[in-house]
Structure formats: C-alpha cells, structure tokens
Image (cartoon, rainbow, N blue to C red; front, side, top):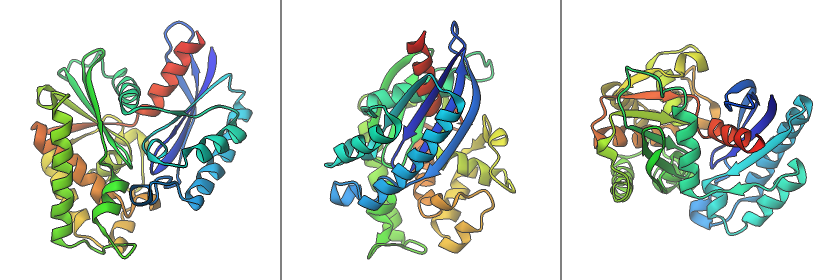
Length: 317
C-alpha cells in the first residue's frame, strides 16, 4: 500500500484527504478527511489580490494539516490550488507560504485539470450502477468557479466558468461590504442573469443537455442535500449518493434567498462558513438543473479531493 495525501485549496475552503492506495488498482482506503473554511478568495473578484488575512487563515490550516500528514507517515503529497489562487496577482505569496509549511509546490491547476480531477473523484464509484444512465454531467460548484464535465468512463468535454458561491455573493449580494439580509429582488435577478450567461459560455464547449445523470459536488450541493433531508447535523454518510429533486432544490433555494443571516445560521446542518454564501450556491445548482432539464441531482461527497488522491496514487505506482 502507498499512503497518499491530497489537499484541495479552493476559494472558500481547504480540505485534506489521507488514504492508503492499493498498488494495483489505485483504490483508496480513507484514513482522515477534514475541511476548514478559510475564504482564500475574499475580495479577489474586486481587488485581484489575495488578502493578507485570507492568506494567514489558509497558512494556519496548512500548519494543522502538516501535523496530520506527519502523524500518518504520508509517502506522497499532492497539493492542488484552484480558482482564487489562479486569479490573484500575488499568488507567489501563496505558493511560497505553502511550500515553506508543507514542503511541496502547490499546483495552480487550470479549469480543465480541475474538471478532470472532479470527474474522476465523483464517478469511479458510480461506474457500475445500473440505475444511473450515462453520460454523466458532473458539476463542481466551488467558491470562485464551477466546473462542468460530461463523460462516460472518461471525460468527453469540460469547461470551467467563473461563477461560484463566494464570487456571486460578493458580486451581487453585498452592499457596503455587508451581505444583504435578505437580498433585494433586483440583486437576485442580476445574479441569476450572471449565472445564465455563464451557462451559455459552458454550453459552447460542453453538451450539457446530452447528459442523462447529473452529479453534484462540493459544499453548496451537499448542504442543499442536508437541508432537503432535514438532517439534525451534517452527516456525510446520509448525504453521499443521496438524490434531491429539482422541485425540492427550487423550494430550498427560494427559502435561502429570502432568509436572514440568523435564519440560515439556525439550520442545524449549516457550516458557519457557508451561511453567507449558500444562497448563491443553491441558485447556481438550481439554474444548472433547469438548464439541462435534470429532474434530480445525485449528490457526491467524493469529488476533486478524491480525484487528486487517485492521481497521486497512480503516479506512485
């Protein structure tokens, strides 16, 4: 067995997976999985730079993860950084900090690479399911961007567009530096128009409507599933491979868009770091479902992080 670690550093959160990889198949046995909300992309859409406080939050999480990686005796570590660090003028500050703490160079991947990792992580377990029709459309709704991937066993087409729960919240739902509580109808309409324009761009290269099964990844989607199930607390086992109908997603999205910060924070399964951005993330999901005509979304807890670990394991063989 090869012990691998994967770190996925996105716009809103940074996550760690430590796993043992089978030397022949690359299958993973999970040993540790954790997530920290760091909001690395704070203000990047407006300033083009990573904020000092956002960098420090991220480096603090990296120091915590370094201890976990050392404790588990990891043989191979892969660190992938996505949308926020890709867009920032001062991304070298980020790269240098990660290298100093974890001893590896963070890979600031392209949107297409991000899509490949997401598809691999999300669909390996689904490949043998007879109740799910192909091709799959995997959508990974992040903080700064959303990846769209259509494929069967392998990726056929992929596109990353700059709509995510943090970017949409900062662009449309904030006034004077504060998230509207709740947002006005014109703010929601502007955000919806922005999302629809992004879907138009995605459809230029990805045949979204050819998909027969929609697979949704990342925190916005998993939180919507938790709300749909009325879970008393966030429960990965209950969320993984759950299915949420389009009507239920629409109902939840409408509720979130018209709720106050306090009302969203009171949802038992809501992570505190998602309270202000979940409404935007839910609207992205709903817009995708309506565009492609998906009656339901299959929710996966296995995503880009698992894809990174699979690739790290394959490289170690």
